[in-house]
Image 1 (cartoon, rainbow, N blue to C red):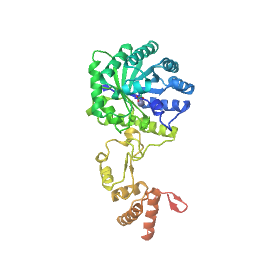
Image 2 (cartoon, rainbow, N blue to C red):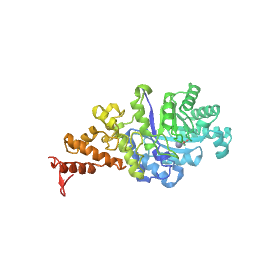
Image 3 (cartoon, rainbow, N blue to C red):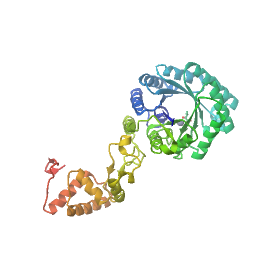
Image 4 (cartoon, rainbow, N blue to C red):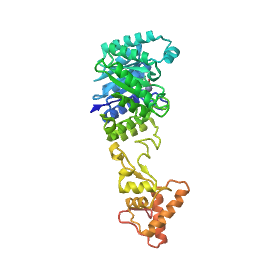
Length: 402
Ligand code: KIV
Ligand code: ZN
């Protein structure tokens, strides 16, 4: 079975989004977490951006031992020199050179002809390859490039020594069919060039970043570039946790594996939230607070009988401490009874009826029901039934069972 390499760009593309800037120590702390997660490549930053960025990339390069460390550079001398300097202490350095290949970017942004672009690719990939054992070339805005020119650019980069060729959907414009077709075209064209890994790099402007990345895998990509929690420019990059879990849960379909230790996913996500102070939306796949929460009574009943009824991922498999059965207005009696047992209370049928009715009244008021509410309800019910009983395993604080 082929391995799809995971190239994490949280520290570079992820950090480029507002509110996600990280200092040197924070970058090193997150890099260590990414290494424990099992990512194959850590893109540590864009060293030419500032002296502080160069130092941070160098510190990550020195700290990381098992993963490759990549540094980004435009196809120009000062960028490549800065990236090479930052990568000096790396055990396994990778220089990542990029240049746009779409006419829009070439004309409006770079004011370069296609010929000049090919010359720059050839020059700076070759220069990098003479000084760094591994060079990746990215054709920025590949998905909006003229396919014939894109093929020429890929061929030029490969001939100059790049062994990883990345085809970014820079503005998240592509669809899975189109993106996959582009990989087929490039793969067929480069058929005779050996030892080339094709890579996908997708942005989420149309919410298709993960779907496009997976389509690329189906079309032969063996490296995926992604970020923790899907952070990144504008609407973000493809989310690492969604990609890794999709490839694992649907392994029979994709027929590939990754080196990701799935059980480390949740703590990597939490580390990023703690460092940046930005939390993930509750409904975010895999790592959102609701990803393993069940409120509807029918679902809760199913989960209690067999979790496979409504869960395709075991929470423990991705490091989530436990699933949550939330008591809300859609909940059923079975879930309520179970939650009370977890809190240390075994309810009679009458108590369950009373508590359920009172819980639904509370839920109808639009409020989330907490464990404290449930304790109040059972005490009220028992008081009313003149049979207040404190369970053996409950502690009593200020006269109330906690
Ligand atoms: O989105 C993009 O095209 C990029 C490249 C620099 C790889 O981030
Ligand atoms: Zn990007």
